[in-house]
Image (cartoon, rainbow, N blue to C red; front, top):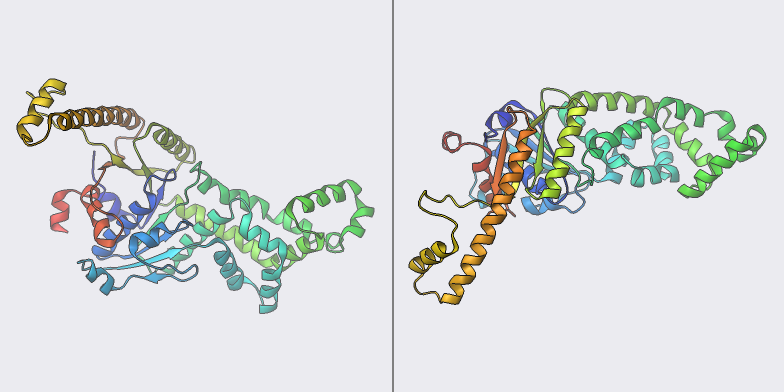
Length: 387
């Protein structure tokens, strides 16, 4: 296994991906704290509605504003950053509203879009909408040139590749052909004009309205008409985000745990990235059970372990010793199984991809000081001392 020193030093964007519950948010926060402590203007972005990032950093994050972490907050944790750290939480609705406010041609158009019920449904529930806004926020941060390092904590999706593919689905829905169709005068005139022009189409659209809860076709047409200029810009921004994700500045880091089901999902994600021609730059395996580093004379023989335990803990009752031996051997069996699974997982990886294994830790990772406990696994001890 290698460390992440080269990955951290040579990339501006770190995208942490993986299944839910594997420690992505904590890993993202720890990487961001590393950047701030080592002189980089760092931003960490999350779209996790559970607000775990705020808990890790001890913050109350706003849904719309970037929240800088002051040097006083670092000082209370005994840390002295030479860079900066800003945290952002992408709230789907707020991000869409901010985009409309930024790109609407007039205040009247902005207000009309924000009040439109089709827009409200699109911005809150449409598949891919949340993911698109996260990537749009990432692109905005990159092109603002305000940060040297941006860490993106991706959403806990069941199929992690959805995060990358969902925005493309949204783009296809918002493509120019569809928007032009809705902006046709016959559509803007509503059902009366449709019923004469094409009864089949009218019936299908009425079904769509019943399913989405939008009661009049006019609202849909009004939305597309008001967004007329913005859709063209959306396509430009989608292309910009796609280019950004594929650039040399971006590193995808796969965060996983050693459980069999999670590793299977991680392998699926790795293969998916490969199909999309996106290079995986590193793997972080959290909560690994460590194997006992026994000497040559030591074995996992129950009798021998029991004897060693009695010598080491002479004050402990015999029944408690048996319980300790039983749990120790069960832990080692679990650790051995994980090690074998990880060996199989490694075989599918390129030899150039560093893999970092982080054991179950006793330290609390719920604050700035605790997050630094992960840094000794990201980089070598030598780098830690010289940094």
